[in-house]
Length: 333
Ligand code: 2U9
Image 1 (spheres, rainbow, N blue to C red):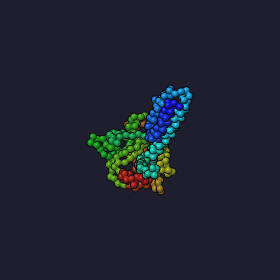
Image 2 (image 1 turned 135 degrees about the vertical axis):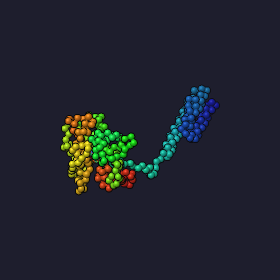
Image 3 (image 1 turned 90 degrees about the vertical axis):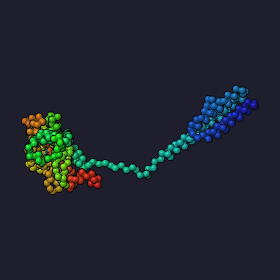
């Protein structure tokens, strides 16, 4: 045995021992990779030891070759095992850090809801949209023309007393009904039309359990060739039955400046007749005001107070409850 051989054998054994110690001490995957390069890399310790093989005899070389392979395998296996262990530890640490305590109380997020006036408007509009109506809106501040003049209610008309409202210094006013929306709609569109106008309206009224100076209306308007009072009656009856269920409906003669003839409509609700709606055939003067020829076209219209519908449907006794924003009241609906 030559000194060379002994020396190389010692070097290989030392290399293995040293590598095993370093691998055992490695704390991270990065450290481990550095060790792989250091011992098994192209310019690593094992390559350097094997570089000394040139000085061995032909019989000695296979011995060192076999030993070197053994050392390489041991070191590689050590690296693999340590790598698996470090990876498992890393996953364990991550799992521990990200653990969710599903028994912790959640964050309370209150669920919002529609105001009963909003849901009443939505229900009514759904019915009219189902009957082919388009929903239209307009300004709450109006001119005298759109609120009164165009609706056959000139300045000296006695009906103005019933619809006294809030006047602005410039002569404009807060609308007393959403009919002005329909005047504007007719100016911008040609017949046939079917339009529903929901919105906030104003009256100079003393507030009590059934009156408010600010309230909400929905009005409908249909203008076409050949529309008659029968069409109006069928539309109103269908609407009220959709809204209240199977009920008796009664039409009584009435007066409005913008319809002729006009009627008030009652429903038989819990054994009593309740007035819920006004309607009529559009006055020819109103059609003329927007440039429709009343010899060709006829129309019908109807209007109702949303508060009144909501109160009847939900058995409310005081209109003011609808404006107080008291959640103890509103949560019931
Ligand atoms: C145009 C022409 C006519 C709308 C109509 C009523 C009858 C009616 C009241 C019900 C209760 C108002 O909220 S309330 O106080 N409304 O009785 N409204 S006919 O007639 C129109 C609308 C638009 C162009």
